[in-house]
Every structure is written in structure tokens, then in C-alpha cells.
Image 1 (tube, rainbow, N blue to C red):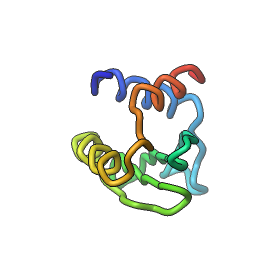
Image 2: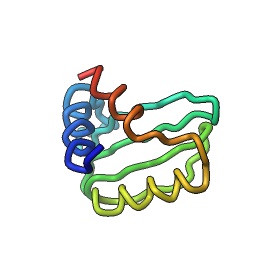
Image 3: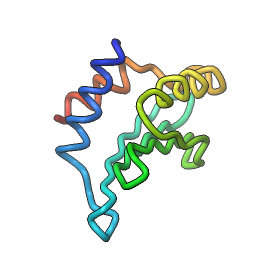
Image 4: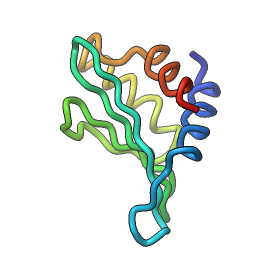
Length: 99
């Protein structure tokens, strides 16, 4: 899947499902995918810091990055360190089906 497609899908998903963090300066939405290798969850937050991605594996935060330019390398690292967990086509196709 192309990075532009991933960004388009996640941004549309965010707009549809975002929730405020309480003070209406931070908004977030998350998507989780359950596989035989475990659970991958990505939380996208838009706040004064920018676009923040919090990435969890089996409910444990493994990384947090700011911006789309940092997101894609972070996901490559997650895929390498957790084989079989991240299938970007399956992950984002599932997300797209909810838009």
C-alpha cells in the first residue's frame, strides 16, 4: 500500500472517530488489529505538539513519534522487531472499511 493511501485512510478515519482528550486542544483516534502474532494498536493524536503516533504491541507502548515522516520508519521498525504482527495492507484495509 502506498504511503499516500495510508495517510489518506488514517486521516479520514481520524476525522470520523476522533475524541477529545478533555480540553479540546487534543483529539485522538485509534485502530487495533488482532493477529496470531499479537495485537497492534496505533493511536493518532493531533495536539499542539503536532500529529503524534503512539504505537502499542500487546497493550504496551513500544514507541511514540511525531509526524508522518517519522511514522513510516517507526512502523518498519515495529514490523522488524515483531514478525507477523504488522501487515500494512490488512491493517489499513480494515481501517478503511470503517470509514
